[in-house]
Amino acid sequence: MTAFNAFHGSKTFSGELLTNGEIVTLDFIFEPNGIIRGTVLAEDGVTRVEGARVDLRHPGLSASIFTDAEGRFEFPLVPPEDLPFPIDAFYEDGVAFRNARILVCFTRFGQVLEVEIVLPKQGSISGIVEDSFGEPVALADVALTETEYPRRQLTHSRPTTRDGSRSPTSSKARSTCARGRSRSAAGVPPPAP
Image: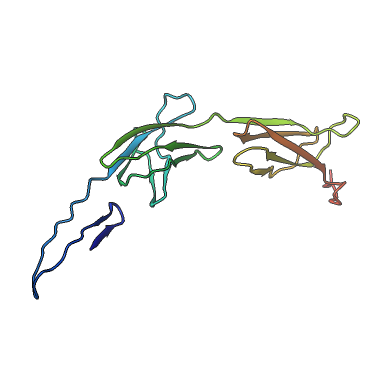
């Protein structure tokens, strides 16, 4: 006989019934699962982040919670796993977003694991679109492509100003590729002065 519980795994017992109508009572006692708890910190490594979403990506279960006023979170009843698995933190403040991933090893029943997740720094990108002669390009569309995770394509919602400049765009990637295109070259007529 095997008893299975999604949080505790399975227990197997073998034996035999010796007489017709015999009743055998078995108690299956599962080991207690563990707890993963921790804190989400801002890019300075000190400031606690309230309202960050934390995603547990355990192979046997997935769960999401938000950090409390102290930046803390807790996942109870986490079963042990032979392989490392990720925990992701995501925070957005309206203008910028930050996300971080850690891998945890959680291999024992009853284990209590304390973790810290530090969100990465994020910068802004601003500049001037110029043509091949070094002249500013007014009303150019600008697109940025992050060349590393999360590899977002960031298209600026407003074209460059008449002097070719553009307002900052947030990016967390260390490497970003910028591309500007004149609206007139794309067949879009310039607006009336």
